[in-house]
Length: 287
Length: 103
Length: 163
Image 1 (cartoon, rainbow over the protein chains, first blue to last red):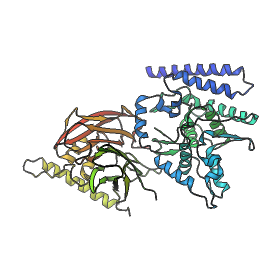
Image 2: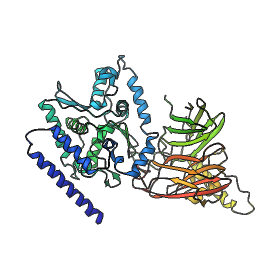
Image 3: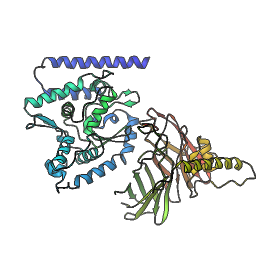
């Protein structure tokens, strides 16, 4: 009983905070203002968790719980993503049938560039994620695309994240109404309640990070994508950003979207942008 | 095929610290697959570390060792640049061997 | 290749297990020659891994019982982040250590791992184990022919034996 009322009280409080944020936002609702959003978003987490070092938010739930942090540090001595990372490195260096490689598709040969994804492609008028860019690279070179959620895609992104570790997330929103619309659309998706449980992404990852939902400790939304892809013990395997979104939706009993659908791309754009300035920590290991 | 065995062996004075991670499903025999059928037990039974022709560490494992098992131990008497031989055998008779340089 | 498990093989292994349980029973008689079961010998301790309870597994592995000792230091989390991967480590200040074993009391089979510690190897092991539910983890150190133990309860909220 006591625990339950505490939770209810907690969410009521959080709802108030969100309400307060929303109402300040209303005054500027006619103008999408990512710069104001990132400030409000980061300050919310920094104030809610004054003892967590800012860069530590890229380490998810491990930044909020000492016992878990020790288990994680032990895991990181020889991390479970090691095999995926090795596989990714090898795949990245292996030429396609036409002799070209992934390096030919990316700036700087694809090394140390994770922090720039996703980006807004002004030609296409849409957000392009790293996973999408990898599959487009494959298709442009006559190779079949990979599944977006795990296996090869997770290995490739693990390697690309690894070469970018410590670089600060640096997502640009060009002065293009379509880019602002994509950002706003992602933000809306993130804060909209859906599914049988009537949860939004924010219900867990903004209101309740560090708290347990059933058995799991919730990760803060701030920096959550900096650790992608992740090896989850729960999955006993690697998963990409796409997999994370799909499982979030299905765990709250909402209908997941197709990986790399416009809305997921926009959510990734929003969530990555508000993590600007935090280091890339992927690939990550998570419970 | 890449080796299933990853080893880090670092010498610090007289002590060599060894960490190993092995790619193996370590199926316990108690888990069902998506069709509801029991996945048969499949796990490494013995993992051996040899230095200079002598066992320095031998693990007997059952199915309760985690997937992609990890182990850490230390032993005395080796030097940087020496070889450490690692091998495992599982309950289906599969095996793998590798040699790591102590750094 | 890897096709030695089948209904027949499985059944035979079970029968073998039953036979060794019977042997242990005999071993308790004063005049019966106790089969050498010290973990220091080379054979894979098949029957010890088949025992359900921790007491039976210790008996099958070592043929004797352990006494708690504060010289055995067991390091395990309060709450496992996932029962499938629980980091557990043991160190000891005891001399003449020949083996270190880990038991998870309420797993389907208690014995999880047993390590031989030859002369010159430091009596300290870290590994990652599966735990089906909240229960005691027991580490046994065999030193100078005697058994010493340390026990710690680890809470498991997400079990390591399911999907």
